[in-house]
Length: 283
Length: 260
Image 1 (cartoon, rainbow over the protein chains, first blue to last red):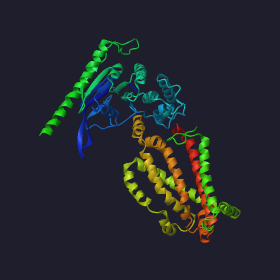
Image 2 (cartoon, rainbow over the protein chains, first blue to last red):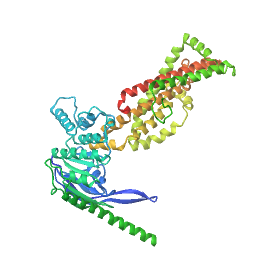
Image 3 (cartoon, rainbow over the protein chains, first blue to last red):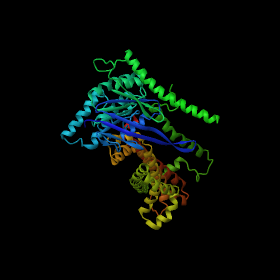
Image 4 (tube, rainbow over the protein chains, first blue to last red):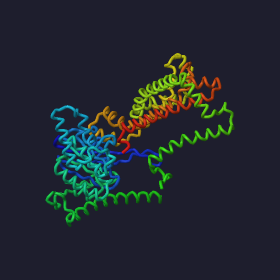
């Protein structure tokens, strides 16, 4: 698969939730518009509950929008499919398969690996390449439960990429990892992003992670989620491997700008809500 | 010093086996002591020695034939229930429509005692082998269905979603995720139900039987042959234990991943 232009147009999404024994409709996303170029790495940040993961699940086809449309290279998303690889926060490797069987799972669904045609050798070649790229050579025969959290996420990424999806969707993939492992994963994924030209949508609550890994950073405001601002990382200093240099005043300024946007969108709304509640109580 | 009473702490294998053997020897010893004290009449509680002699007598006549026919009935009833019950349970746990249609009726019948079906079975099926097999089938089928449905529901949604995002179709999700993920639990459910199938044996052999362990126990009751009742019960227990052990060994072989 090639290309991978994502067009998100006027997306609205709400959930029915129970509030004081009554079913209420809570809007989560409101009029989301995003246009992502093929190969672009888009990071989505925002306060907790702003709908970042919901947006990703909509693109993955795991949720249906109330209004609006999402298309990949002009094809409207109607449900999940192999053109969009997904890496979730929690590992979704099947515990009953070895790491290798997990990685090759999507290929095995479509082609019989016992046959000897070119498709098979290509699938095995790509799987092997991803195993090497993610440093999983010694883990392929193990079961997922025998791997550390970091290694599990490497295998999840390899598995999501094995079918060469047009878009890679990552929902806080390193959220459950410790700081040191996360740092290592940033290096691994930066390298991966340089090698794989797949379009990436990456949800994170870690602004630093977003700056290091992304081309663009989209800040979502909360309650309901709207696109508040979009930042681009092209002006940041990078080392010879193309990785953003963190120890730089420009980096700190940039990070602060994004953080202040997140704070502002959250605080404004939280304050508004609080004032409304106080007013109601007084009346 | 080995800590034996730490919560969920593992203990050495030899200690485990010693305790398992002790679990059999201690009741046997207590039984022997009570008998030698002559507290109860031998009619109510025969000594282990009398029970062993009864075992020898039965072995010399037709114990193996009785054991074979009983095992045949239990295994047939159980297999029939498993072959039909497992797929139905999987479908109930997977599709809400099937759940809505079959779960309430299954739960309704599940609470009915299998012995209450004996007159109906006699009426509908007759007095042949199939009648006895049917009673065992009725005893375990509805339990298998409800337990398998629950095992399937316990497969985390994240695996199903992950499979869909990798391009799996509905049937592939059912086969590669739901069935394979629930397989160890389903196997354990079958193990437990195999045990229950043995408990239904005596009821099943109330239906016009002329051979079998359950039938022999019922006959022994008529003639107040308490030692033979003991032998019959103990043999059913041993057979159940052997089946249980075989299931456990197969579980370890088939589902290596669940022991990691």
